[in-house]
Amino acid sequence: MEFKTDVVIIGAGPSGLFQCFELGLLGIDAHIVDSLPVIGGQCSMLYPDKAIYDIPGLPIVGAQELIDRLAEQLKPFDPTFHLGHRVTRLTRLEDNSFELHTEGDICFQTRAMVIAAGLGAFKPRPLRLDGINQFEQTNLHYHVADKLHFKGKKVVILGGGDSALDWVLELAVVAKHVHIVHRRNEFRAAPASIAKMHELIDDPNQPVDCLIGRIPSYQSDQGKITAIDVAPFGDSEPQRLELDELLVFYGLSPDLGPIADWGLDIERKHISVNLETFQTNIPGIYAIGDINTYPGKKKLILSGFHEGALTAFAIQQYLDPDTKHKLQYTTTSSALQKRLGVQDTAE
Image 1 (cartoon, rainbow, N blue to C red):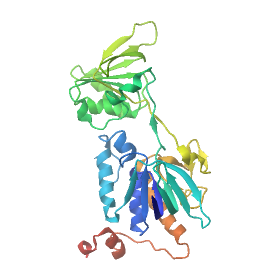
Image 2 (spheres, one colour):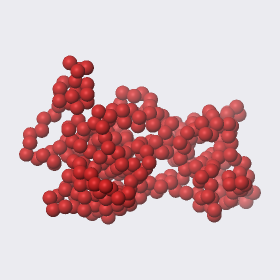
Image 3 (tube, rainbow, N blue to C red):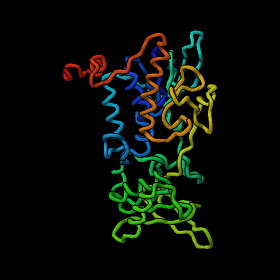
Image 4 (cartoon, rainbow, N blue to C red):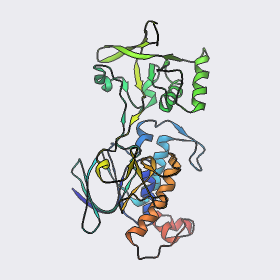
């Protein structure tokens, strides 16, 4: 299957969705490709119920709600999504356009590309115990799709970072009991989350406990994990924790995959970009969001939005360098309002 478009955006997370919106405002056609089966990236796959507090104009918004709002905002441009497709091969053609292939036998001919792939084709770091992978289809989880699945259950959470503590706090209000197990006393999460977790642990009326130690073994029965053993550091005997559900948040292993072989300047698994245009060392290829790096880079969703806006103008100039481009505002531009389908309302 072949498609011809102005721009291909790799990544359907917040940055990729907003990038498509900004391109749409400028009348630039774009297709979005993502290896995941749904839009939203980490927001949808790892913490859909997590509250986000630093999106301008939204004092508090759930991660999935933010994705839903971005998708709604994008509707006037009727975006084309290719989900469940991993990009594999890139070829530069004689006219300086690109031919892009996916594992699903889709071929794009595009004049420009934006890599908004977050951490890349990220994979959760697994719990390394013999035979435990078989339980990923039952009660071993590396992300949470619906927190109500854990209602009234005994939950054990492994890890000490933001995701682990976020889900301790979220599931404490629905689960029968939550145990967090970490290999050290120090946690790598936001200070406010650590403080709140300790408040729950110290409150005898709250169903939250913490154990420090490693996981040497587990018990199973009828296709499910029934318990894990937690071995404290030292000579103490392991403690057995019975459970209904086991969640593992050991972090993510970023993997650029085939992108790493495209000749891009890569620094510690991040793509170096020009701070003015967010173009890579290859003309016509841009990178925004968590996957890029530049002096002063901050990995924030709102930073990705800012980068997407500037990248859209840079792409407009790249695609049509001889035309004088004018900055327009959605509040006053009839052309932009027409593209958004709100012209009649605004007049």
